[in-house]
Length: 237
Ligand code: ADE
Image (cartoon, rainbow, N blue to C red; front, side):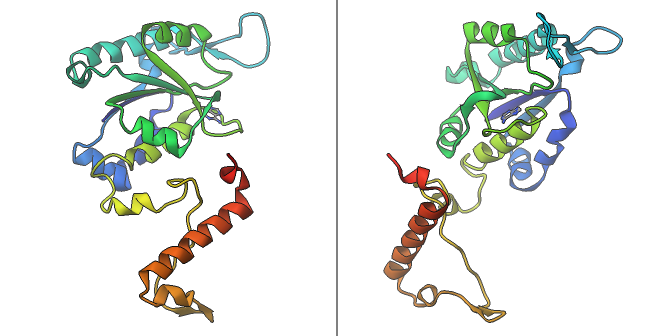
């Protein structure tokens, strides 16, 4: 999968060199390219924002640097992976006004060949940027949740981690992807390891029984109970 990220804080994404995603990059499973939006400015101050037309607080990101940067990435795309697979890139703008990111969306996005993330800051990006690229291709606004961050960078890091670990070969043991929270619409059951007793607290005896049927049934019941307690909304409908 190819992922392009556009941001005014490219060093936010240095952490993607760590851990499983870093290894996936090194092994060529993930082609990650980070772009500094200010490289698409042409004034001495490398300006990316301006005051909101019509008045109001804060600053809005100007359309010109976004247009220049996204055009450059899309141009580079035509000659790269995408045209061969017939799969147009998908541009994602993280935004609290977007559809909420879920495990289902992560699974869906893991099938894409090429994702482009555009990280807004301040009061957001000039609406015409969304309109322009929606008219030319696929664009989605995606929110991490019902709260406001200072910009899209942290949201994009979370999305890339959730998507990246679903790519074939990224997580060593793919079985570990199956039995985790949200994969079956439930929260994950509690996990234990050795020693069997720690500070007087015992591992539930069923897990030491060797009875795989009983263990699976216990885990399912625990998942259901946890979901009922913490996230009853997941059980509705
Ligand atoms: N940018 C600011 N807040 C955000 C959120 N909740 N999700 C995604 N991007 C954001």
